[in-house]
Image (cartoon, rainbow, N blue to C red; front, side, top):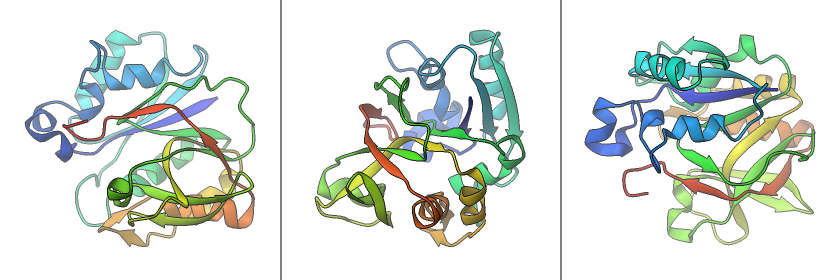
Length: 218
């Protein structure tokens, strides 16, 4: 299995730490965030990692911390200017992901065992407080399937938030949708790819136990 981790952004929500260290390398319980993510998957899995801001730090760290892992690095040229965002970073990785794959952001830690989960399109979800919902990609679920998406909008309890990961089986459908670069908060998000999955195929919502560590407070 291939897993794509996006570690290209500047980590502005990490305050002064984000200016000096790539967000994915910040330590949680004496272990870099990206190491927690890698250890969530099987030893034989392969990784595609998008790098940009302080990208050499990521490469140097992983060469020492995970020397046996098969890792393909993808340099994201636009990681902070107009049109940048996770959707664009993921598109940079497309040539290495023309097959079923996992997508993982670099600012969360998964506590759910990913073995024996369905090999259909599925997305990790969780409930978040109402006053925090506008920081997430929010999904409406009926009979276990996603049927609506509201990205970076305040949503009531009828919605759940995309936590992580996203497993993309129908990759052609996903990539076709992701090419639509409608911007949300001036960024190219991945929600267009997610929308394409549930509109043209099916997308199962699975409750995932996780830690959101996307900002300095968390």
